[in-house]
Length: 248
Length: 320
View 1 (cartoon, one colour):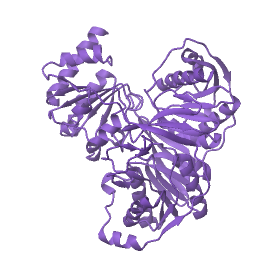
View 2 (tube, chains in turn orange, purple):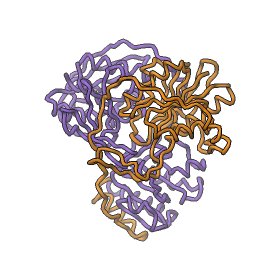
View 3 (tube, chains in turn brown, purple):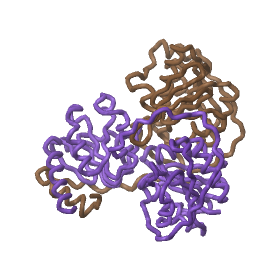
View 4 (cartoon, chains in turn cyan, yellow):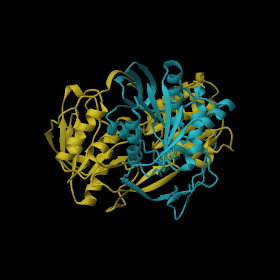
């Protein structure tokens, strides 16, 4: 089984979010970048398939050279080969188009991506990629088993979960649950040394026009100070929620 | 060239979000000088959408569609959009709508923007405001394609009654085969889901252990609220993953969010920031949540919460 894991290069979850160039660009100054958490859960599940079911695992990112340390980290976790499509990721559609080319060229059976990236939260690349490559698709995936070409997956739905059966070729959008937080792997020194020797192939992009463009960013308006209510005066809290906030 | 809106139902009844997306579609249609057509699958009372601004409803009735299937539902909406020559398609932010949206976008060659929080600031270029960086910012995004798909963030626009009426037409699109089949659904029918909830009651590590969740559930019960939890609580296995809210968990966009024993890590606050009114109950006045909340109580949850339950019950009895 040939697995491709899509890796987004995103600001660490603790990052302060600021913008530059007249609020048109994300300010990367002082920001630490990591593997998108939803992708890391999927990558960890892919490592399980590699170890138990003899799968090969490649990782891919669409981005500039600055994303290579993130791909190297994925290699240190245990992926075999990394691919970087050498172009700026401009919108979900254009990223999906670039990835579809990689999937078709590489003949992958299973593609695992994250439910959404924690930077732009679009949540569209995996589904678009499935539609473009004609693969089956399961999103919000919290459990995945593969047996030959059949797959069983659990999808989180609003207020519960749903078990589905499907088959390869398949695109999965994973999240926490596909493996547990405690299953995540911190690369060890040997993994990091080996990752330096593993192939990181840079491929040139295909010509794609973005369907959406972000004209500007803005930050939420600053919030007023919290109104404190005395613990002995909970009547006042009920009163405020009813008469002032009007939410009960 | 109407605005098409997909209105979700469950067991024949419209979800609350269905009325909100129709209200939104009506606002977009007014800006563009056109009308709203809704598409429904196995919904009863399709004409009730008229009250929120739909002038026409395409009603699909098909037993084989009783379980949601992203590919089939996307195909239905795609055919409805082509039928209506729709230039804008509006969807909700439910798990199902977010599942089908990218498939629909490829089918319609349409640009898709999710997590939209406001009516378009301009229709040419078509520009919408959406959340980004998990609610730490907004992006004003232009959709450059002929057909546009807007995924509306739940509870962001509100339900607006327009007082019109809708004509209902039977619609029989061709349904493609799907490569994914549902084996079983495990869903608590007596509980409000976080996505649908107007009020969310959330507990953190300050509650000391899973055995103390009784009062969280009771408070949620009194308020008709969904229960949620912080990341450490779900990581410790005190509560199921499905209740984890925050940057790597579920986003919350409720009208009221009550955080109990949650300190307010930046990742948690990002995930719940879209909620309109936030209340924090915590023993530590230095907890970062107090900077993000609208109302706060510095106190022991084990004393404050039971009192709050009692006061809310009294309030309810009085206002019933």
